[in-house]
Image (cartoon, rainbow, N blue to C red; front, side, top):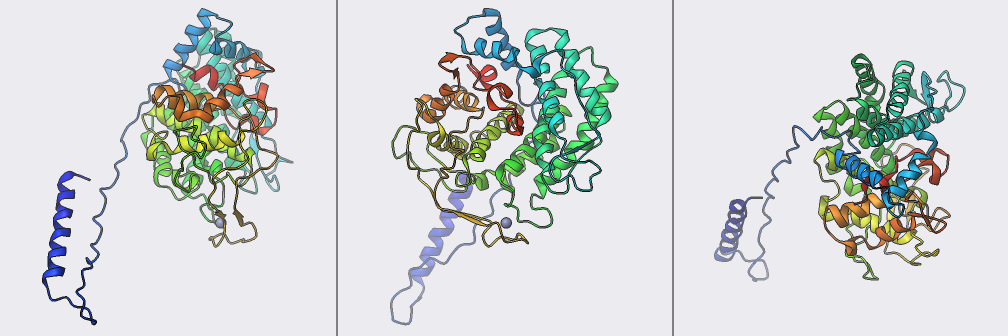
Length: 463
Ligand SMILES: [Zn+2]
């Protein structure tokens, strides 16, 4: 709001006050009515979304400066250096080997396979191959060795030629469209300047992303409830991964409208990926006064901690993509995302082998109660933070969060007290510095959740 407008409004208020006191405005009992009649709120100026973004990085997730920083550390080869330790660990990843071969399928099914023409869920090769394509692309960028570039584009070409559809008879395929969508898009993006990738093949790949993946990401972002559910029925992660895919595909195809779709949803959307639905209540102060970053429960804090921690990983990578494109999701509403990270870290981190606290501030959360879902049998009232067996779940992203807020944004360690503790915990394996706090498969298991986020953030984002 401009100063001029504020003065104008003050003027109107003063004038109204004069009127209501000067006029013979008596109530029935003879007292003067000093109440100021309500003024119609002046409409806020509409938010203007950018018409273009920064499309100049290797991909939305990884900036050129990230690659340059890792290259310097690799050249220095200091065994005590966190980034170098992480690089050595990365080089051992089964998905970063030049011998890796893709196993593409024509119809990918995640969810119910009934009637899809496929016998059962078959998305395993899709998630592994997408992760391999991006890890190989990254290894080529850092090492400069062509064998990794050739292995990466072979995967991308195979998938773009063979895969025609992503589907299921329930909505789980949207998760695949999100998680693997952004991974594939970033991988292809990172290879676009490789001289060994034919221009025609690059075009086929881009069209594949735009015709098989993007429509699903768009659909789920604009209409998360589908035909039967309310907009908040699917938890935050469902929209977060689809928004990440929009950002990645927007960067790949240099299409600002695709980026704006995600931006708009995060800022003002109706679904659970919108900032104020993902973090439904205002942040509160840390009762232990350890962090200045505040604490905020997420929509999933009372659900289970396996998912509550995924919200963090997904946010970290999506916020970083937005940041690289020139949008500050991290800082929106006074660093609200940081407060959610601090909350989740305080509850889940085990810095010395034990949890930090037994209680957390919590505001009752009503999930799908009195909502517009046609089927009403799944509502839940969360009255406390979930203390399920998933508490302590290790997922990547903490070094990315810590480095962004403490160093890039310059808020210092005190604003990220708990996120830093969690990040430090993940840098060691059995007491040895392995720097694999961002590692994917080698540390986070071989099931699908290991591929929900790309990881390797300790290597990529440590400053
Ligand atoms: Zn609902």
